[in-house]
Image 1 (cartoon, rainbow over the protein chains, first blue to last red):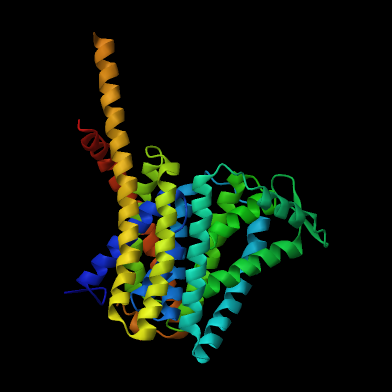
Image 2: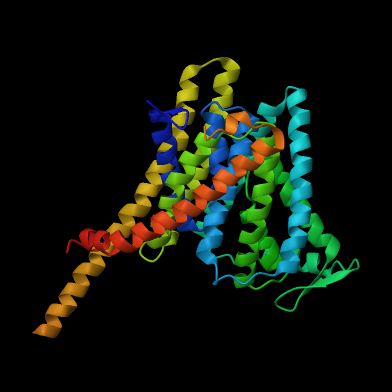
Length: 333
Length: 49
């Protein structure tokens, strides 16, 4: 049986994977795009399609995020517009890089190596974060340097800080290139860049981040769709699962302790890095078992960590239920 | 699918991005309504009440 032009099994697989990603990233407050593109790579999709579909997924999830945060998030429109200008230019350049690498026959290797590195770095940073109480002094020092660059004109931002126009455009451009090449939303870079780099208050950074990811995600998805690199059935299935999972994950944040599970989450990102490496080694040396290992690693680790989130939440919910019932009995006596 | 195959270039790209947009809004509305209706019941069931 076919749904949306794809086999029912594949639709179920992508919807299920979307659900897991939604639970995880809804719980940890991230978009989840940087696990979608490597999963598509591991499943054998062309790099361009994996990146283009990843960007469309980013767009869909950020539209839902924008709807959820409407009325809550404050937006610095000046900053959002400048960042979108920088990011869309970067995405365009990123797509040219992709086309150049594709023509040179080096695209798959480049994207794979980039993802192995990205997932390993984000995984290690998350692991360090989970194991220490470090408040990130290195980041603060870097941010101070960024704010001290006073190339005119400078732009006044919400929160009272002022930053050079060129720094804002350069940061947006850099994140845009990453987004255009890897199919990620870039929220994990945008948030710290705005909060620590530009001195924007957290509430404004959240609202501005969602707006600019929505706009640049739409632009990125459109750019890749022009060349036929957007797989709608895959994106629709992933989005159906992740929108539900994100609600479950967000509800779980009030129950489970994030720090208890952060280590597992870091391990999952590292497993994602290994999965992409395993897939490439499998292709290079024609070892089919390595390709199977890569799929098991990326799907299995997402399943295990989201199960840990759910188990921890349900246990906490039951414990709360029992203590509330005990309190009610004590009051009645 | 949805007649998109008949389109090409920018029109096709715009239609695809538009469909993702419409799906995202639909999912937000549908899951939001389901959450309001079923959420308390699921919570109670998980609490063992």
